[in-house]
Length: 269
Image (cartoon, one colour):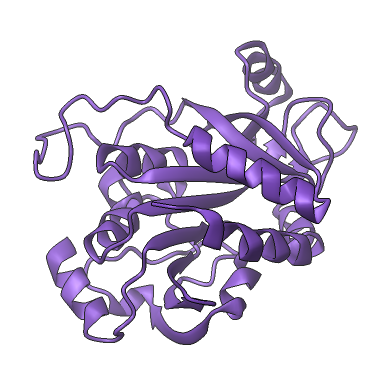
C-alpha cells in the first residue's frame, strides 16, 4: 500500500523532499512557511489514516523552505484513536519512500520535570515506550531495515547538537530530556506521573515513539522536539484539559516557527 501512496503523492508534485517534519497538536503553523507547496488531505492518499484529534489539520504538505525540499505532516494518527501500530507509522514509511532521509518530530507534551515551564521547548534525548506495543512486531522486511535495529541513539546526537547551537543563536530557551509515551487518551494520574519521574522521564505524551522506532529501523536520522503545553497531573493544583494544549501551541507558535526555519536547512542527511 505504501507504494500506491508513493505513486499518488509523486503524481501531485515534482518536489522530492529530503526531510520530513511531523507537527503535533496545535503546532501546525510552520506549514504556512513553505513555498511552491502542494496540500494533499490524508483522506485522499491511499492507505493513509485520517487524523481525528482536535488541533491536527490532517494533511500532507510538500514544498520548499528556501532551497530545501520538505514534506510536512500537519497532524498525525494516534493509537488512542483506535489505529494500530502500522497505521500510526504509515506516514513515516511513505515519506521515506518518496525520498526523505531525515525526520523531525514535534509533539505536545506534559511537563514532568519540575524545572520545566508551560510553553517551553524540550529537545528529546531518549524515550521510554509505555504504549504496550512496537511497530516492528511481525515479519520483518529486510529491504527496509534489520530485524533487531539498534536504538542506542534513537535521536541523533549530531542533530541535537545542531539544534542547541541554533537555539543559542536565536536566544530561544531549549531544555533536553527523556520523553515517555503513554497510550492515552486519558491523561495520566498523579501517581503515574510520580512513577514516570522516578524512572527518568522529563515529559510525557501519547505519540512520536512508534514513528521514531520506524524511522530508525529504516536508517533515517531523527530529531524530536516537545512543546510543554501543560504541567502533568499533580504538579499544579488544577485539572488538565485539551484546550490548554491548543492555547499553549498558539502561544509558542512564532517561536517554534522561527526555530524550525533556522534549524531545518542545517540538518544534513
